[in-house]
Length: 125
Image 1 (cartoon, rainbow, N blue to C red):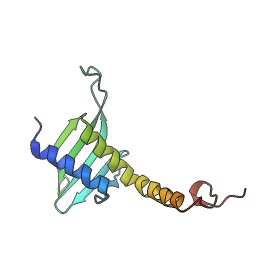
Image 2: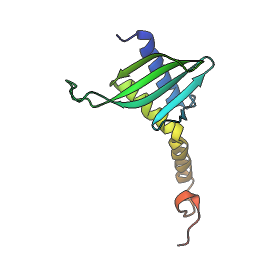
Image 3: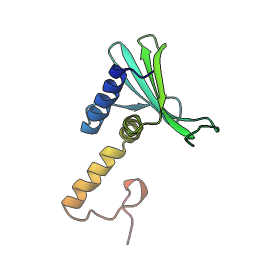
Image 4: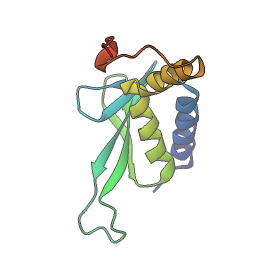
């Protein structure tokens, strides 16, 4: 059963993440991202669904709510758009993609930057 407060929390997390005010971080697990609050933390990840899923969904988005001691308190495993979008933005934020895109857009707005190779090293023409 879905709880309205959980849906509201997911929506607000998404909105704040898009605004850039949620500091998502990578975890020790690949493709799992976390944000910490004073007495809790939230993790999101992709999770494989059942092969015999009646709707043909083989990938779902998972959100886990942890207490201050790191114990899982609640979780949702769903395939709806708000949680998928939250995962996508959390991943982009944790990986630094948003900052990199903003930096590139700033450079493009100010003219073509000096030619650089992989890792920001200047390369000869």
